[in-house]
Image (cartoon, rainbow, N blue to C red; front, side, top):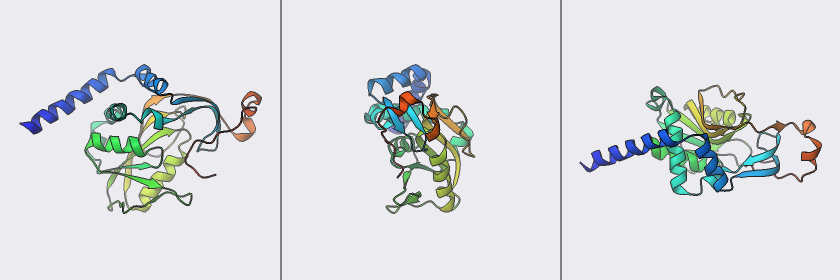
Length: 213
């Protein structure tokens, strides 16, 4: 009986999430947590932007992180969700949301690190040969980090069957080679180094991402 009650409660939470979660609610979460920053940022992709989404702030509240994760899980088609064996995310940005997505899917969640600039599994984590993996990111801009993380999973013998992210700011241009689902699409302009507008170039650069220079 207790198991049935828990199952019904989880289903009810997911149903409420799918009904109530829309772009305005998500943006409100980012604004209220001061996660939407303005300035001059050098993104992990190497491009420049006047805006940065600091997902660590929006995820610092456990209830909010769990709610956003449930929204992400609802984005996944049932046929993909049923195949997932393991959740993998790149540290540091994807670590918290990856853990919460793992909780939502009732799957183990591990993370990749890049101490030498390349993604690796550490801390005793492993991927069994043939395991079907869901990749979880916080923000996707060009998709470079995601493609590198997907390649790292392949080197370990796993297969990434889909990726989810809190935010897609690629303007639907990121080609990850796998089905990709985002909770929120935001199209902030980004610039190559030789394209940065004068007004943005006049602002000191901040590099908030986890990729080493």
